[in-house]
Length: 112
Length: 113
Image 1: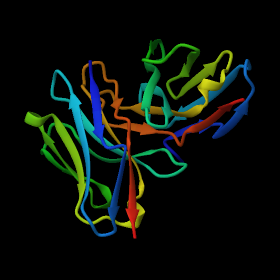
Image 2: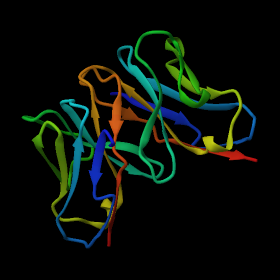
Image 3: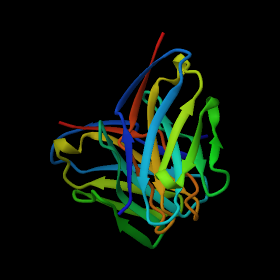
Image 4: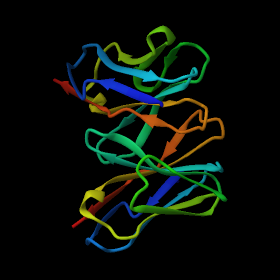
């Protein structure tokens, strides 16, 4: 089984709809992250969480929200999806010292 | 502010030729440095990392990188490119203050038969 699992892998949704992307990890780490990948822009941090009670905004958090349901689960929500949120989304987890980030397979989201 | 610069968004090499992908970073303290590879329709896989041990780091699939503090660089090399090396490569830095990972914009490597 994968260390970091994202669901769904692909999703097409309509403008204005609420959508949730889910992430679970089996590494036992407290730190989890949500990134967005766009061509030519690399990966940009949306939100991160260093434990269940700690949630922090990244550089592009507008239009997104997160929930840390447990140490192993970190979900990303788009309250009202818009077309420029079409992107590849990655969840990741890391050890406390930041010596490696482990990534999920990604969720390809299309907003039409 | 932390930043990572990857020179060249697209690099093409012939099969068997040297691969050199460039990465420069800015950090106020010696950081942890990483190279990740992304194959089509897949997630990111760690190629290698520098975490303040040896400055020449060897990774998977014959890749290596050298941390040069004076040049703030962490360039990725492979002596002989293989067709299977075609992928997107990302350089990343964790300044280990705040423990966020900052990524470059990526370099797409094409290997020409």
